[in-house]
Length: 548
Image (cartoon, rainbow, N blue to C red; front, side, top):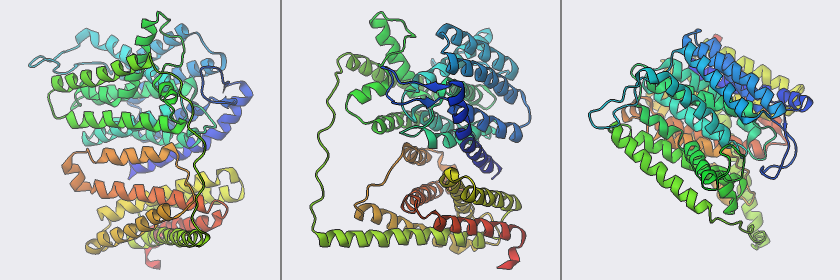
């Protein structure tokens, strides 16, 4: 539960820091101006990476002792922070930027002690040990991942979403391996990215900037080394699947530039997301397609991980080679396509049918709200006694919600979301696992299942019946991707911790709450009242469980 609380701290901290950093970015000139190569319009601050860096590193320092691993993160991240701020403000030459990345990688690895010890059994019976080449190879790998994510940062939510999938899957692997330090790294990074993506989903109001994309790439490489090169580590080949899409994109672009005899580091519009846009996909469709490809590669790696290294490596070379070859040759013949035809025709049903469906949709939305209210208000009483630390966090979230309601209205929706997700995830995990001895163990699973079945019925019913088009952001697809990854976890872990049921209920809670929040966006006090009551019950059940 401590890990979960720190996840929420990272989310909240990053969410709160993004707006003030945006103002600072506009004042000091850290903004992205559109040009012929970029797909956005308007001047947008490039300070999202600053919020991610602070939002991830502060919880990390408080959660972990200052070990060599943590000190390496702080040193490398601090050096990239300075390099990124200068680059975002003055557009450094790529040679100076590359030199700064090398220096940061060398410093971080020297302090942490991370390096490549082995590349695995890449040939039957032969373990490729790195020896004295382990350190320079680690430096090369860290600089490579730093630039892989930097090059992938081309559409709203793209680089952040890819990294979210990487850190989520890496955190799961670290959890299975009982690797606390790597797990905490992944949890803090995951929370910070979630807080940032709410501002970066299309249409974005803030960008990562080179500060953010380099820091994300650095942390991806650092995490991969920690995951694969420490004691009881995973096979090194597996980490290549976790960074699959950035590798495919970079290799394709470099091959095309070589074939055209152009500078390797000259910016252009030949990246994977540019090709998808040329195919006629809309912005969010291109992002979702890349998310799906990244998810498929991660799932493939998890599926093949029990096999020998040389088989996993051969499969990787075959899959990545096929993708790169296809994109390379297809990218040379792709042409601009006209946009889609005119808007779809309007609905032609009779007025009676329209009124009937609108009435049924209102009933469904009311039932959905009632189901969520029952869940949030009954769970604290059901769980009691609530742990005292949960009670303290609950009263803090309640105070933040009240403050946003009466002082800073611009943060009201975000604060409501964070409070709802904090309480909802805690309720679902605790009720499903039955960790509280005072709960009704035989009946609790059935009651929770029935309640969420009713919520699912009202949610799906509204989507089918209503004429209203619901806004779906790329974060929603990332949540679905995370749930899909759960089905590829080890079977004994899934059975012991009820992972399938917990993941599905969290996903449904998230989607249902987003729908209710959208419907009540002009009547937020209805939701705020329910959340304040739920958080207040948490606080009361933590210190005075005998009240009810």
